[in-house]
Image (cartoon, rainbow, N blue to C red; front, side, top):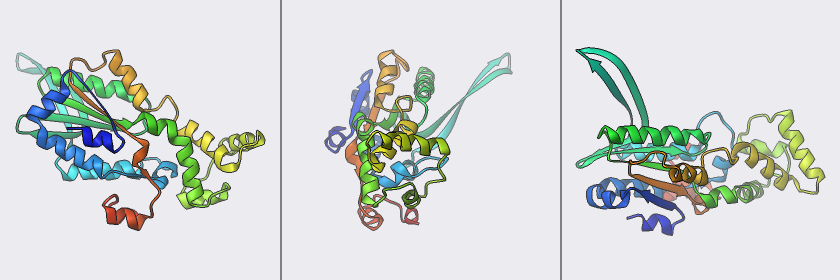
Length: 261
């Protein structure tokens, strides 16, 4: 069921017979998920732009999933003794899809601190043990995207003709700190050009090894975090990055029209 995703650049892995469960009981729900991921693209603007919230690409994927019925849900687990509630625990999941044969829970970890993987997988484990979900899905940056991030940032700067700090305004980047500017200056003293120096510093700062990406997710799975909940793990590959113009992206269905502004 996931071969099409693999063909277009995604990594897909499964644990605890999740692919067999999906194929037998959840073909419609997974077809919805695969459809959203097939149309998903990341722009250079999404990679480089700053901001306190999620990247625009992640927001668009969330809206696409929500339109297909994958909504945020807060599972409440209550402990009651002799009719008196003693404890209530909540498990908030960003995307929950209730199907005819069960419930799917999905989390997107585009760029968080890597301990968020522990939270997600442990939530899946508890909810599966309570028969609240049939399996869990995690979508994150794939290995090829993580490894290629510096080159992608350089390419994004080049595509916009940016070769100085002042040129970063094209990405709606907030004012950079003195520390950030100094790091780039030091790297340029070693012989790097501006684009390479900026990209190296920017990626280390924003997409470092301690953030959520494929290798960190695999570390948890190898240690058994989340067991025995069946899991589908999806890594976004470097192939999903595009430098096309916004109008072309809208034509292809990659952007929602309101995102152009």
